[in-house]
Amino acid sequence: MLARTWAWLLLAGAALLAALVFLGATFPSGDYLFLPNEASPVANRVAVEGEGAPDPDGGIYYVDVRLKKARWLERLVPFFRPDGASLVPGHAVTAPGQSFADRIATARDEMARSEQIAAAVALQAAGKTVDAAPRGALVESVAIDVPAANALRNGDVIVEAAGRAVRTPDALRRAVRHVMPGDPVRLRLRREGKQLERTVRTVAAPDDEKRAIIGVRVSQDARIELPVDVRIDLGDVGGPSAGLPFALEVYQELGNDVDRGYRVAATGEIELDGTVVPVGGIKQKTFGVRSSGADVFLVPAGDNAETAQQYAGDLRVIPVESFEQALRVLRTLPEK
Image (cartoon, rainbow, N blue to C red):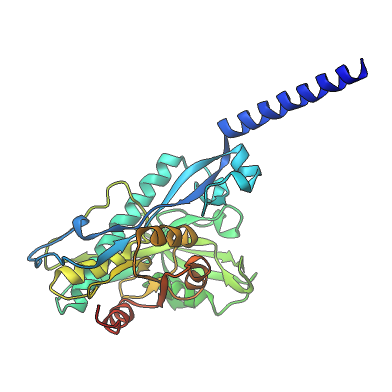
């Protein structure tokens, strides 16, 4: 009798466990998974007026990150996450009051701005005259847990910080670098055509308690008029992180041998002065580049490069700080 009771208990426990696993594998949580996506050639996505014949060897590759809702089982048990995946809290993907569709629309806007800036940088490097004027740091999103959330909105353009003029996102970062975490920073910004002033208290950066940040994600606001027609279309891919491969491909299609026969993968947001700045999802992008068989992977210098090195295996990772440096590094690769 006792053995039969234990058998029923074990059977019931197994059935309950199976039901929990089924539910956990079926129902989504509020968080997301960043997943690797194989790097792809960008040549058939870029068209430059007067471009030369396509390079039969090598090529410039871009890489993006797939995003999907994490099932509860994936959220709670890392073993069930796909190889190379990272769990990301929901609030880091969609801001308060923002739907996932809104986030996708924002990412596409970021991509459009990135395309224009990348084209401008490449054309200027090729000796073309580009009418381009940086106009400040455009606020893409504000973290929910920072004081700036009460003062700034998506779409604001920061033009001054801590008494320093801000024409680029990098200028904003340099301005804030001079204050300590917790100190207030006075901002001048442009909102819907009006000039406003706001004072926000800084917080410590997640990776460095001694470095102050405002807690916003920004991109370049600029007026750009290109001397030739440049068309870039990555379909449903969004965000600004393909700026560097865009610029490399545009420069190559203007008749310059950029890849020199290598399969060159690249990631990095590019600013109007050619500065290459860090991007997200670098772990997943490194996995994606490895699976594509690329020869080298150009990434923003600093933390991005360090993370890429951790997952690169035999893939050669090359840190770069600017578009010009990327061109110099590629020119020094041995003949293939």
